[in-house]
Length: 237
Image (cartoon, rainbow, N blue to C red):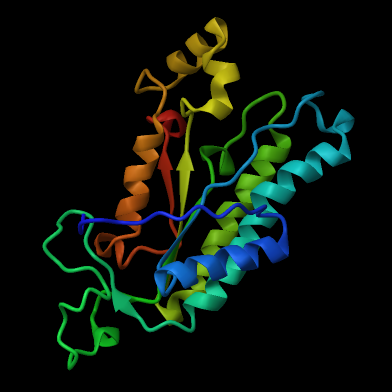
């Protein structure tokens, strides 16, 4: 949007406190501050028995540790950074006419922290449509973890609104990704999922990514504590 951009890859286990700390530090070291956190690391349903009475505790822990504990840790250390940053307005997702923060185009006499759209940061936690509904057979750990993510999001939105930090969640439905290849790669399961989705097709990663961009922009400056469902109408049934 603003010319050349540089992406930096940092390998980290979101369930490892030290690695999460180092990931946040790396982001600040390369970017000068941390404006946006998108929590997109996650695991699907557990393998083995679909019923809780037979579910191995280590399988339950594995899903909860990544999906919920990992989200907690990345929020925790990102928020530590964000609350100590100066609030600035972020660029709009719908226009590229405004200069980016730190571009030097804004007069030094302007106090950006007083701008009505100024924020210290924004957090987008990726939950799921299964945070509020359930599916039969094998989704107990996943539903529990994503329900936790959604309610953690709401709590953080309340706690950090005073710091001008937005916290929202995206709640995707059935997306055609590598993680779901076992479903869309199976002719019967693929047909079932398409037929039960009112839109009549799988969602794409881009469908969620574009909404994440909007939530991270000034267009959503007054949006916080929301769980935005992106599921082709599935949960409206």
